[in-house]
Length: 150
Picture 1 (spheres, helix red, strand yellow):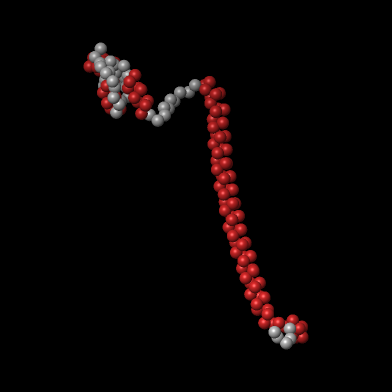
Picture 2 (cartoon, rainbow, N blue to C red):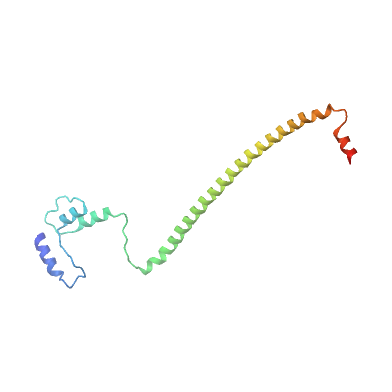
């Protein structure tokens, strides 16, 4: 059967009312491969779609098959639970790392602030000692004068 006879047979098989489409065109596998963007090696006049299916599947990232198999839910439920648990643990781990990083950053900020304030305290104590030396030269101590005025 050549591609032309296949197209004629498929056009007879797919009558106008049997498919809910408005535009239907039968093409050979080599033409289908050209449309997909793949090249077939010496397909000749075969009408087998294996090469077309392989090329189409190779272009897809993932295949979605909407099959509802009752027995598969028994197997898939524990897998889904394990997958969601792993995702949950990963999210908790990332959040914990973010929390630890923020606490570590705050620790260094407070550590630097404490060092700055201790340095300021030392400078103020030195300035106080220098200023208090002025009172040592006075004939009367300021504390005694304070007590007298009360």
